[in-house]
Structures are given as C-alpha cells and as structure tokens.
Length: 119
Image (cartoon, rainbow, N blue to C red; front, side, top):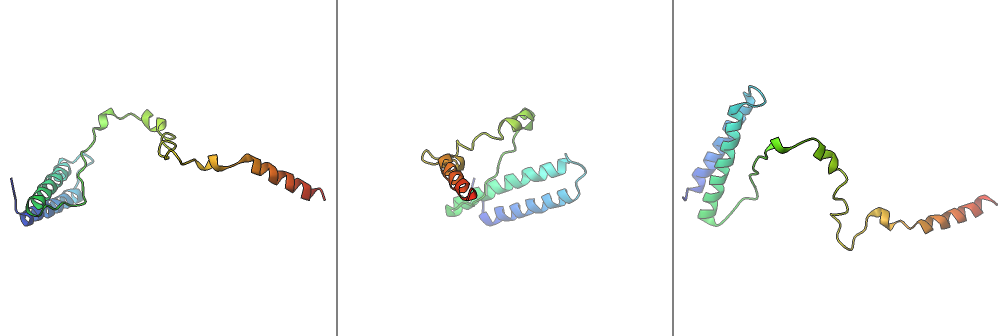
C-alpha cells in the first residue's frame, strides 16, 4: 500500500506532537495515553519510511526498536555480565594492555634504581 511521503511525514509530525502532549499531561508511570502515543509514533514512522522508499527508493537513518519484555529480566544477570566480553571484543592479533607489560623491564629498573640509591 503506497502512500504519499508528504502525507506520511505530516502524520509522523502529528504523532510526535500528540506524544508530547500526552507526556506533558502524564498521569503516572503507566499512563495509557503516553503508551498509545508511543506506539502511534512507531506506526507513523514505519508508514513514512515505507512511503519514502516506495516513492524515492530512499530510507532514513533511523530504526524503531521493539520494546523488550521486561518480565524475563532478573537482577542477577547484571552482575554476571560485568566483566564478560572485554577479551571477546579483541581481535585475534590484539592484546590487553596488561599483556603488553613485560615484568622483566621493571626488574631492570629496580636493579638500576638500587645501584643509584646505594651510591
């Protein structure tokens, strides 16, 4: 279903305006008006992007992310992931900074410093 990109853009701008109005009149954390306006923005954006692509083979640099289900989250996962991944992100030929330290260099400095301090 092809739409006029200009009309789809106007619908998107209207959805943003409605979201702003709903947010400024929020009646609590789970206000259904804000939630509905949030969904309306996502739907209007998808319609705009489709119309833009159909008319001009063009897209925007924006992405609508689906809201994740928070019911599966538990706090213990946060602690498990804190140190994970640092080494996994490195390329095969990269090393951590701590791997670049040669302890023998420190021993040489200790020996040289000890010789100077004994004079």
